[in-house]
Length: 274
Image (cartoon, rainbow, N blue to C red; front, top):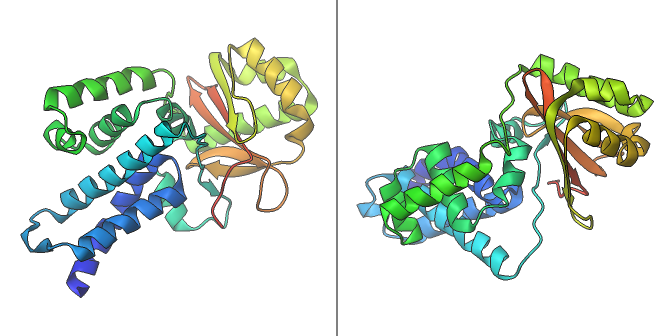
């Protein structure tokens, strides 16, 4: 059992990344990984030749079941961002590594099968033959699911192309303009095709596009709260939280493209660990 536990721990970080991208919740990701350990400890693992692949398959199936259950009960799901202040623990940085909040928000619009195929193939290079087995589909069908997911994600969730220091400069300029109510300064840091998305529990989803319209939306809805904002890393990228203490009113994440802010994603009343 000690040898089995050691083998599992070697793969825990990878499994947690897979589960978080599948579910968008660190708590649910940890539950999925724990379920994989329970199944491993109760199984005859003597015939397992690729422990990492076996565990990834189990975690993927657990996550798929959860995504399908959400869909069946039409459950409202709000992405659970990973927040790091200066004292943020290293394991949270690991969890948020390379997955922006904008991407997780867009992934929530995919079907469970599309999300699994896209996440496993495009993010973790799992072959379509293996994905097909998890979904009980043919490899060609799995490839089509990943392709549909890719088309829906592309453009809707761009990746930041600026370094962290420049991203922080733009985020700080955004916040300063918001606090001052300076429309022109706000437009100056926004990409012409910027997308503003507001999601959260107990709020009606809002999506706004275009620099002028996004600036108006930010000043109308966000200026009263801007004075409560403080810098943080949101899923590994510069952003800020709005509120007092450890339970913020909202979390704000940014994507920077061509030296301008290309997306502003706000999670209202976020569910955080701790």
